[in-house]
Length: 343
Image 1 (cartoon, rainbow, N blue to C red):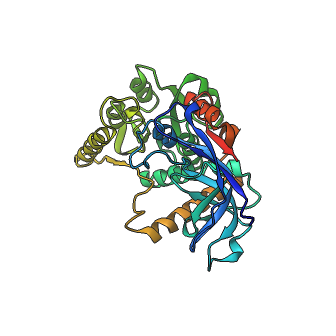
Image 2 (cartoon, rainbow, N blue to C red):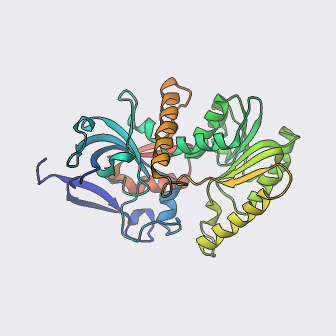
Image 3 (spheres, helix red, strand yellow):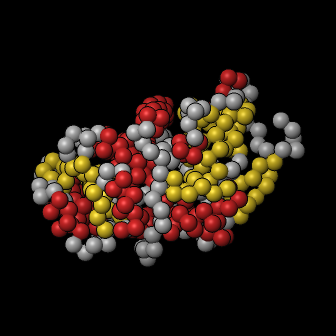
């Protein structure tokens, strides 16, 4: 590889508006032992990056840094002693940060093979989002014929979650703004307006005995309503804390209060199961097992994508260099699905 080769990357310099993102050029990195250089074909914009630009994502790096939670691309080089057979193969990886670039260094153990016949942008919609949705549905232990409530059903995780739920034979009620309702109906969802002051009553009309699971990425005051809507033995899975955005309190304190509430509810003798889904749970303490599960679950989701069970919901595609416009579009939430960046 020529020493003059350059990469392009997006830098988040601090707390800025979307137009404050910076485009940086630097020399092509060289992978060390155990690492691979991946030419990025697709990455995406998630709620994580939207939080990071406000300095509200727990555990985010110090500014400046390159955002980007996951990627799909082709291995172009491996470090010394690495498996040369990897070069030229398409892979996916969860990076947490660093994916908004034309070329990324990724730990070889974090790479998952991707079938070469799949569109990288389509795959990008189900890397973190698909694994998250699949693992949360597994936690809920659902059975055919049961009913679930998905808040934010138009989002990146939500659109995959509702499709997987329908595949499992589950009835899906989904909340979203009315402009997304037609698209959700096409996915087999029964939509409700998330701003309806009588939302809880609407859900009870549709499912008088309560719902068997609620998936809530918002938390905040509405999490109490989510809990009260559960049927006997039902499960509440909170997988975000979007309500904390713009909150005057510390994001850490808001999160601690949320976990305390969930822990208290889970201890009540009413048969409900309550928990917070953390994608990274076990990453540090059970690294090898965490990676095996991630590869297995992503493989299942990719197979469902190939079969057409999951129809990729791409809100928009943008070149990497138009990331500011892409981030503004994503935060406007004008179309369901995920905004994909294509370096």
